[in-house]
Length: 109
Length: 113
Image (cartoon, rainbow over all chains, first blue to last red; front, top):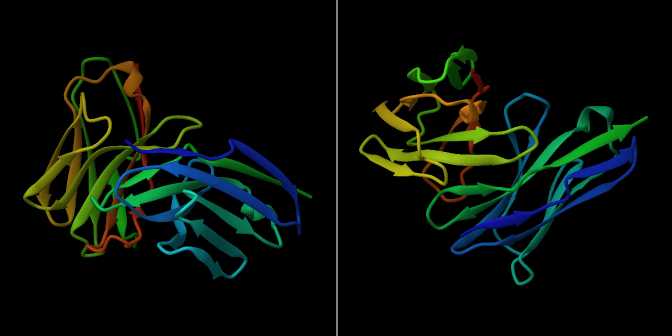
């Protein structure tokens, strides 16, 4: 089966940098995705890693280490609007995804 | 117009009733998915379909059924709703590639009394 672990809550202040970690156990691993979900809204795609290393998209970066079954999402220059839940998801060879339980990020002034 | 739409957006029903949630997409994607989200938790896959003739069970398919009426339409049914099926339901679509992003609909909030 598949399992993912990520912290349930993270708090940071505006302008700061925050890292949200994700560890996974899975068979048929193909890649790791990150999604953002504002309260009650639809999840939206942020970033994807298939290979080891860092992917940068504006203020958001994502990292993957396949040998450690570990990845993280890095959010820089935090803004109040970044307060949301962030989910890591493993993409598998079967073509479907398994999501973690999400990390609630609270950004304070 | 939204690329992935879900109807209804909110529904309150009673135990034992049959409920259908509908999903339509204009993205031209072959793959469609139904997820359930309980408060404070992640998304659990109910069913997924890689094309009109391909339907697969996900992690939590018991008590649910689906129909892929066309490439653009994928509906989820609860044959006899029960209170623990109260949740937020999302439809999603993606292209054929394994790296393809999933695009989510706005969700349906279902309450079973």
